[in-house]
Length: 141
Image (cartoon, rainbow, N blue to C red; front, side):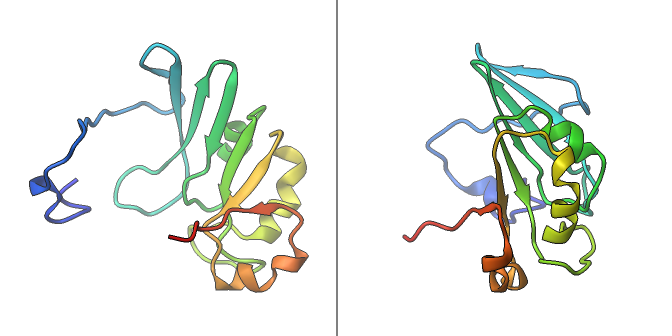
């Protein structure tokens, strides 16, 4: 963590912080009711990048992370109750990011019950009226 957030090793926390490695597409139990499954995605982060799928009490939330389009997203979103998916730009190519145009083209393959887009850049927000999917917004502080 110190590598990604310099100085963080010396911060006193009011909670326990543990790190664990997970294998690609191997369900990992976290506590009595939660299962985490990681899916490798295409993003240059300096470490393996993953989308995440959390299952608890018969419900599934999937999160794309911050990837370029990959077929992995189809499996990640499959039958999820909620798929939170990055969409940084509207219709142009930006390396290691998803465009709304790509998601719209692939939407029929993302068999999730609800899709919310996250991480919108200025380009996405300028086209908000043309987007027929929910976009997450930052809460006011």
